[in-house]
Image (cartoon, rainbow, N blue to C red):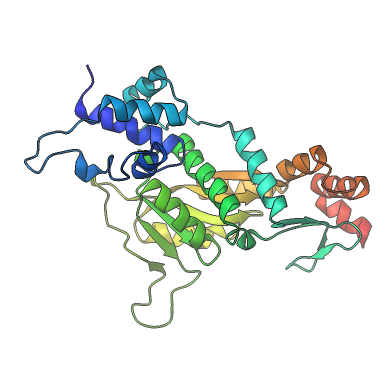
Amino acid sequence: MFTHMQIWRGIDRLAASHGHSPSGLAKLAGLDPTSFNKSKRHSPEGKPRWPSTESLSKVLAVTGATMSEFIALIGANDDTPVAQTFSKDEIARTAAEALISTESVLFNASKPFTLKSGKKSPVYIDCRRLISFVAERKALMDAGAQLLCAEVGPNNIDLLAGGETAGIPYSAFLAERLEKPMIYVRKQPKGYGRMAQIEGVLPETNAKGHAPRVVMIEDLQTDGGSKQIFIDALRAAGAEVKHTFVVFHYGIFPASTANMKALGVKLHALATWWDVLAVAKAKNYFDAATLESVEAFLNDPAKWQEKYD
């Protein structure tokens, strides 16, 4: 016999595992969007309200989940991450296709791009561009919410923090899906007013009386060096930061792994250059010479640049 709290926890986790809020899941199932709101789970007198069998049947049908899978979600420990609906490979492939179709990633071996460092590269990514494409953005943020639920667990997240500036919109999109508070972190304190470096409300403790658990959100990661500014600011303010999320991780610089280990955080990303290259090859998005040059660069950026120069 399951308790009232367990049944509702199962619905919350089912929603999160598909990248939805409870109200989003209700809407997807053709129910009143407020059906699963926390305010509706008890009567004004405080008596527990249970979801109807019809409502439960509809959400199972629309998500494709079986009753056994739903029961597994109910029975899992509060701190256990929920199961993924799609594999990481499927998420990476979807993300790579979205980045290519929106021209957020570009390949050009004959006229390489000049990076901020001044070095040349046959690949370029602009995750800021992605925010203008509604369908692709929605697919990636649904996948991001699912990834965080699966690998971190919604009950292990108190707030999401966007890094100035490119991480702010992605933090907002994910916070909405996960129904979590959001803050954002400046690269340095603003020079007036409260002199704040963290905007929004970062509580001193979470509901359990511990340091608030914050996931740092940015658009991409090359070697991870820029994360330290944001993570240091959050920790100095009393937050616990053990996870960071990016839409795109270069995945070609060993320093990235070393930097994350030194910072004591785990990186979660939707896709890397290797995922983009695999999709580009499979769908013949670029000519053979371009693909060959890009692969040579990804295998050894320094050697490619030396040869180009």
